Image (cartoon, rainbow, N blue to C red; front, side, top):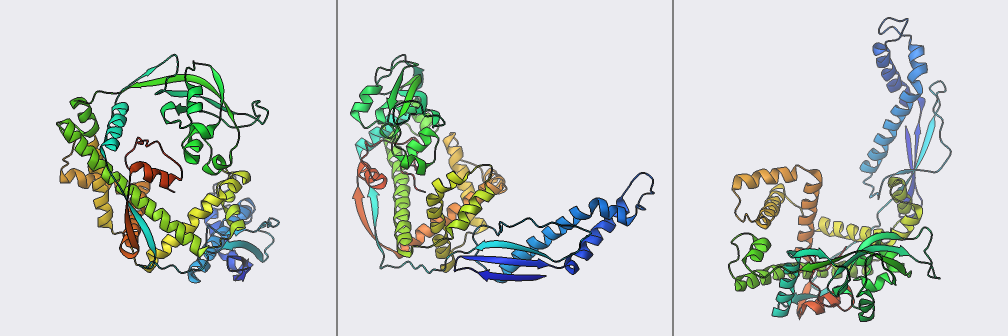
Length: 468
């Protein structure tokens, strides 16, 4: 077997693998002889079917299987032996399909495209300066969150006519430039929360609507940015960022929420039975939860700032053509060429940061131990049980829960990745020069989202600002 690598440039290469008859004849014959021993055909005793007949029936499929095994084994052996920093997986070159014939032994040549990660170095030092934001927790923020909790545990009813605090569920249908329904355009059922519509004129237009009434809306003006609009219309964020169409919106339901009373019943629902005994304790607990959540969001923002700075500084080049092809080849049922083009910039940005982060991890010997993962699994289970009103959990139950969580591949992967990200963040905080700045919640949201905020408290603590 002969393997030749031809480097096209620093990021792309072609790998040629030649397989001679001497490479595949013996393993193919061995498999066919095994088939012969097990063959059971009319007119022949078991195991006595002529080899030629077995070869005729199964030869080509066995030959194809054995060649495929050789290709896979030798491809990845070549990559491993040469420590090639490949991105994605090798892709067969777009050439004429090779005909495999058991009766025509000949040398076969297969060619693959490879793509490599760019070479670069990254160093974090005290010379790198960033702001670290401390978000102040004041009474206004606490009271806003209390209102949010009261709504979360309130009673939901339906109105006949929309009012300023309602949520309107309806169908969005994309319009063309003339205001007609766009054939093949975006169509999705979602909701508009009136109290969070910043544009007063648009908010006024949404008041007094009745079921089955249709109006024209600009989705940008009834959402909180590209990510929120993408979720509202069930499209990708990059597509949302470029969207300029208006939509017809037909009202299907009008939901109103009657907030729960701020009393012991609400305290128990929010933090577990008996955990909070008074309104003062309730406010103190909320302040503590908000402090933890906003500290996490501040950390996320710091990491995003550092990531953006490093990506801008390094300007990593990627094998774009290969990666687009690889994304399409490996996601044929989910992606189209158009979708790949639409979302590629976001994918490339994510990949660049992944490469940089992996280099930071490698340079600093950052690792996550099994014990650390187990303790994190216990912590997550303990937090989950506290939400259901069980703040104390027996050690034996924690051990069993951690074992079950880490026994699931996806959950274990998520925990290890989360711990690794935390360690990278800790390294940044220990290494970089950070200047602490105090901001109000609204100021921080404005800074992080790049636009003014009404100070909305989102439903899930710890997810006040989304970063990818």
